[in-house]
Image (cartoon, rainbow, N blue to C red; front, side, top):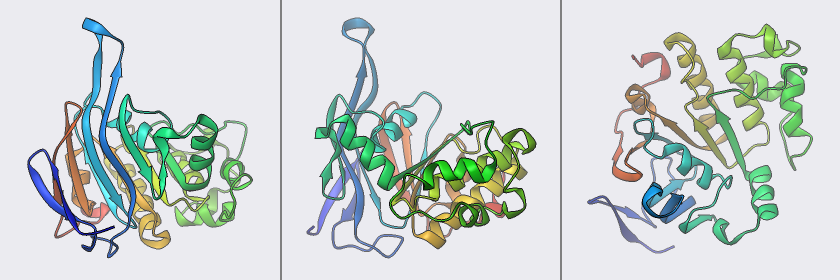
Length: 258
């Protein structure tokens, strides 16, 4: 891709041959002019209003905005869980907006990991077995034990969800998401149900996955403090990108205060 300039809500920045915060110039994911409208006529709800966004290889991005601003809708579209009303989403050379459900499912299975505010673990399976649900259907997965070690849960491999704290359950969910070695990890309010101490542990697990596996990571949150750990911060409001900020100095999760 050649060198150029994109403009988001009045903020221009370069793309193409430039170097990203992660030292790469490769856009893993590109969204252009995304809209999402629910309903019709006077009752229509415009969740997204012309969103342009890029995620680059190996970077950690925080998508920051208030509840109801359309962040989760955007994440679902970026990850192929939903389709936009108009606009395009390209994952590398693939236009996800023209793929059928089977093709989007295959893309999610092979390339995208998800972590949500609610952990969605299977209660009757151990931590190891919950992670194995993904590794058994992935083309080149990590061992479940290795994925759980990445989030510091080696001593909880054979515990059931009911025997784990909220933070531990969230880390199992992160291990499950990264065990397939995804190119892209999308996290929707991963600390939303956690206290600050537990939230820091979860964020450190995400940071470690990003750094050690090189996984492009996008964390959506309403928590302003979390933005300090990102390479870039995408400020989101009323279904649109308001501005984009690059962090010249990043904090570790242990340094965050909220």
